[in-house]
Amino acid sequence: MVNYRRNRVRGGTYFFTVTLRDRRSDLLVREVDALRDAWRAAATRTPHLLIAAVVLPDHLHAVLRMAEDTDDYPRLWQGIKKGFTRRVCAGGRSPWQPRYWERTIHSEAQLQTCVDYVHINPVKHGWVSRVADWPHSSFHRHVRMGLLPSDWAGDADASDHGFGERR
Image (cartoon, rainbow, N blue to C red; front, side):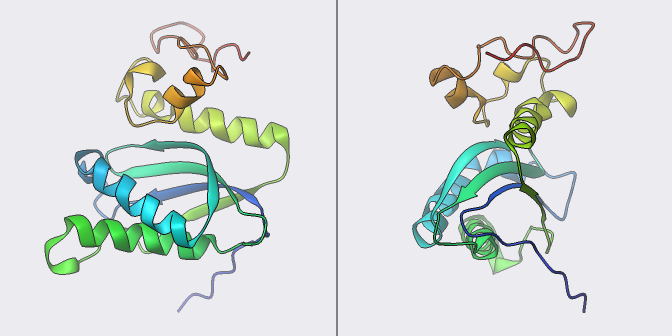
């Protein structure tokens, strides 16, 4: 068995990628309400601040900051995965890949890059041509909060394919 060592920092900020076993599945968007419910339940046991997230058919990305007194994000992901599995999978067979990927965020610039990556991801994968058209993203909350303009990143058909201008 692989002894994988994760970087755990109390109150740390992290970027995560969590995927389904079947990368052709659309389970996460089909059952997005069950995912939200599982996440809310897990958050009561493992407090954190969700900075940015996007749910795609077969994987999700999240940027989150753990509460100051905890570094137990493995418990958070275990709770989310188990809670989702219980809600949607007959027989309890987990649809998730056993592992997930995390990156510790060390600077404001790195944080901004990760948040931008989360929000642009549906365009990158070809699900939509505009970030604003993907419903399962914290992008919409960032727009409501005045952190991003509603046309951020423009149109995938535009020549620059950049992230757009940040306020």
